[in-house]
Image (cartoon, rainbow, N blue to C red; front, side, top):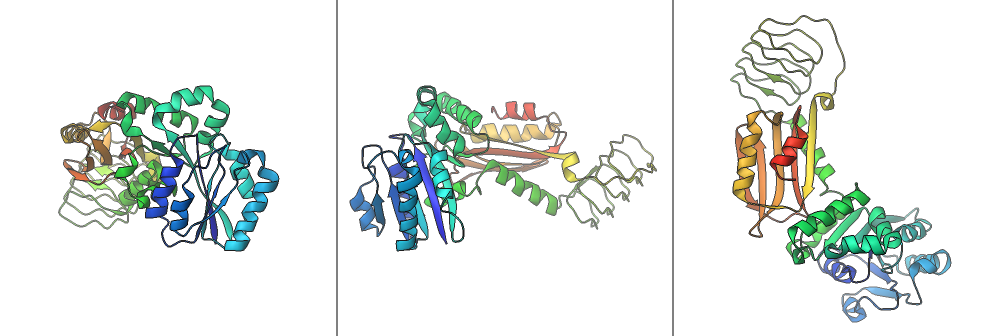
Length: 380
């Protein structure tokens, strides 16, 4: 199986440095071929790569996008036939369109050849000017990439970095964006980012899965339900479905998720909000899913925090002002250059120092979340 990775990026963005880091830290043990195609310059020290046991096929006769149909496709097919590599790394011209390169690669994929990572390496300090001045080519790289890896993020002010990320996110809402300086990340972390395992969507999905399979009860008797919910009562619950919040003393025989605030059991079979003291005997029965009641909110941020700010924000989540928050977690950069990891369940927070992440993330799961207020709380 041969995977073909494409590392695009405007001239001087740092593609060469990034590829060197991955060769040293992430691609070890793989039979790898690098195909570079620079616009009038050789972008990688060939001696360095040859010392690492890497075969190079240089095509410096012009921009890759000028010879896609013939020369490039033939070269790619020949490399695969001659070397049978585990991975081909393509470093296209800085002024080439990433979509054109992907199109050329797709013509040779199939069987044992697949398209791997599609990356745009972006100089964080030049996003606005390059997008304006070289829009057709520059924006294509950003819009087409599945991962955007920012370089030189530690060399610009925080507000400029925030604006750069905002502009990139407007151009590409789906891509994973790496904002952490590369020297704080391992090659393995960068690979996780490129595989989508470190994305905000992946983090939220993991939280939802954990939320679905774990119990967070505050009562004395066991619960016989098959899913995760948050109870505040003394008797066991025999419900058979997802998440609900009860505040009563007797068991509940309901079959679906809802929010009750009463003292007697409820025999209802569908989702609603009650605020009464007697049981409900409504006859409706609907098949509701957890996402009808529980929502997840998340944000990526390059903003820097203090532990005190995070602790204060997590305490505020218990106030009720932000909805019914069942879980919050995140990893954000601290103002002192370290990284803050946090987990929160109602009335309990864990804030600690941990390893760097590809960018900061804050995730919240709950019911009736006031997303705008949560965003304001964390200053994002």
